[in-house]
Image (cartoon, rainbow, N blue to C red; front, top):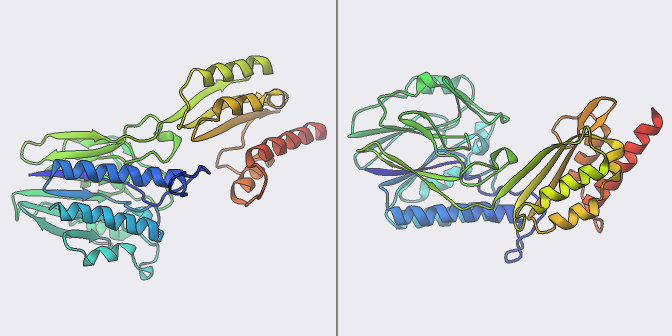
Length: 373
């Protein structure tokens, strides 16, 4: 018996400002849809006995009509090809209040799609396999339900599904807002397979337990990760990772500007950008320990020219002030620079290029800080 294990598709996820010319939608949102469609194409080609989706089908508790319609169309493609689907709720698709209800309820009414979202362990039988599906749940209920997680031996094979971080011999977590952590002691060795979701990189946690990883990249921490899904043969115990094409993501640097003047740093940046294929890619340039005077002297017009072909280009400068490195693109609120950049990211500005406005604003802020010293 063969299954396909996929996870963390995050349908509806959108970021960056690039718009897809064909659809008029956010380009990253389209990329996420395309990755999932490529997965479905391959799964239909493989013809497994079941597809197991171990959480975060959607990126939010309330996906858009577009994301919901797309998910329905693709999952129905699988079921119409004779492939049943089991999908559990992940932390991104689980409301904090149960009274809010779950969007996954819509799948209750579609033949051969088995949604598990009610905060408790459920068993689903498909052919010679019993699937023990444990969705994301909050607080003490998680540990109560995990105590019940054990093979039933009703059928030939017992497979478990879980969504959460795992701690034990290794640490597999995402450091997210309502992340649940599961000790490896709950990953029983007598299951034929344990399909894990939440951690975005394909990883073998135990000999019978794996994260399939996500189908797309959602942060620069995933820039060097392969994306795809797992094909698992329960009889032989063999697993095959199928890689999906995704838009390349490049994290360039870091360059240390501490002992460079502006011309040396400019050359380093230009050489780095000219030495990479940037067309259509998602790119971040990281420069650390840059003095404010060096920052102001950089030729940003030249940098913009070299990076113009990228789908998204992000400059991350960690500015050095009085011996302190200030990361104004980090998530910490510890500087005027960061406050300004964060404000621009969330405030709509019409008829003005935000990148240019950001550069000019940071220049004025830096100059003001120097004059006040």
